[in-house]
Length: 182
Image (cartoon, rainbow, N blue to C red; front, side, top):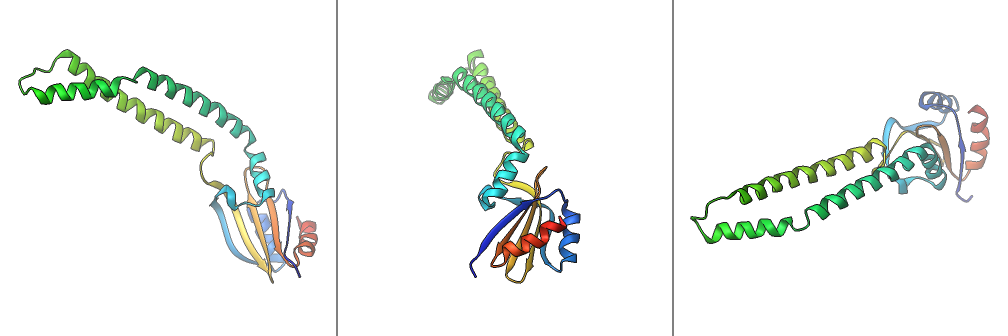
């Protein structure tokens, strides 16, 4: 028999799904209320389910990235000549041991500190804000991986769209019997 891959969407949560699988004598291999998967590890239908469940957040992410990029662009335009000024100041100070530190030097040092602070702030802001809207390299979900014979049942629960994917030689018949329970 050839391998099949079938799926169906459900309204059942992790605990309800676990009970259904246990009643159907399907061996649960992995159960986790929090699992992280890469987008590429999802089947096409699971990818669609995840995208639908975070659609509004993805729209927010585009807005956030745009605002972040514009802010970063303005910041770097403002400080474009700054690295050269710091290098020149350090060269001046190295050439003459007796050269007094002037207000200009102090201003450049303060500018360097401000630059460092602003760069860190922008970096932290973008990283944490994008993580808040769940746009990072991992997808968080609840998960059950189970087995019946040579068929594998995978339940992934994103925010709003739980999906059951069945892979194996008898996937279609297992889907038919399971779907009635869900």
